[in-house]
Image (cartoon, rainbow, N blue to C red; front, side):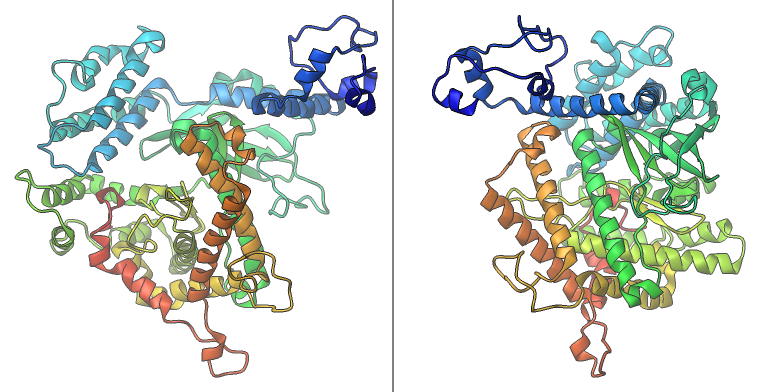
Length: 629
């Protein structure tokens, strides 16, 4: 056939097997005499020319996915039907209600106003006006208009008159807009908290899921090497038996999720929250894939930590929850029922003593950006933070008092404190090495039962050149309340030693006999390291995804090269080398110990600790980062 095509033959005979390997899109017209119709297909010259042209990536991806699903339906029809029913019901029936989504938007807009580098007397920036205009259009006008029986319809006119930029009663200054957003946030919080029950029933949300029989379906989120593998004895996977009838509502920092309890064949239960796209950024496909890549990177790091004796005896391991994509913009995230955000402890303190939680942010913003338009420099920010700290507007033992009221015994307190200190040290090491910023209190989930830590939106940012960007002046979060709870003994004896032991395990020992494969600039520097190879793969996918986001392309196109191959390879190796150099600086130095087989802790971790706690650098952080807490 190839010879006939090259020689310009008049016809090519296609066998039925070849026709099956090239499935057509649904609804595509059948050609007369095609193999699907039982005849012999004769392809003219124009049709052969169209087949030689490159197809759009969307059609290629669609054909591949359809082929996979066709094979699944052919060999496992019951499993395919069950998966489609489960994911369809979860993606449609367990999402947030309109008032809950609007409450989340008000919460995000208020914090965006706090981040504006202007005084409260300044005019509202155009970016905020545009976002508010989009919110009003999406919620109360056009095809998204809420029905008259909906709760949002009761205050439709009030919302438009106060927050619509085109209305005559719109806020004239940024401070007036902040006051209006606060009022709407508090009102929507009361509506969200008081209207629905805190515990929903599966039979009312989805009768289909309650009666669903899970045929040959494994437990969601199970990955090779996790604790579910072989928990039945042997290598048998854990199967999904049913979904518990109770569906609680989880509310955290303006977000409302439904929590599902999945019962497995081993008698254990796993909990997943249903998260929507606006919960994990405005680009759910890209953000969700970034979270998945970071989870896979931490799983690879856990294997390296388990092989090192110093890390293994300290039980160093990242807490990695499972993430299951359901639909575009909807995903399941595994969680512990005892999760609480680090910022929720401060909000609980403010509620107990009837204080405004946003008061330190308002004072810091007023001092740094006075209405008179005074100078704004590093010294002004330092004095503003020092005033908040010295006047005890935010005490340094708030988190400690919350934990003391939570734990029951001294033994539980010691275990919780040690595990939390270890987890924060591992997160701090990864934040410093990969330049991961944005560790606001509401993005740190702490399991009150175990002390494990889960970081939300934990992935790097890149500069215009594609290299890792330095977003913050502090290497990691070790603020006053955390340091007070850990105590000096915990910071010196657990935090720093866990960080250095983990760095030593991740860097590993050098083997000069291996062939250099990774870095062209330093061919024998990191060729030995398993972590270096994993980092190169991680940056390859993450940089391409970042480039697709910049260009406004869908995430499915990230498989297509976004950079020239040489440029992409150079960016990956440069970012990898920078990360490995930082880990090597934190790791102990065996040559300086003076003892055969021993090692001495480097001085660099102490410098990082001092920088993370210095008010000079903390004052340069954004006010929503809560440097005083």
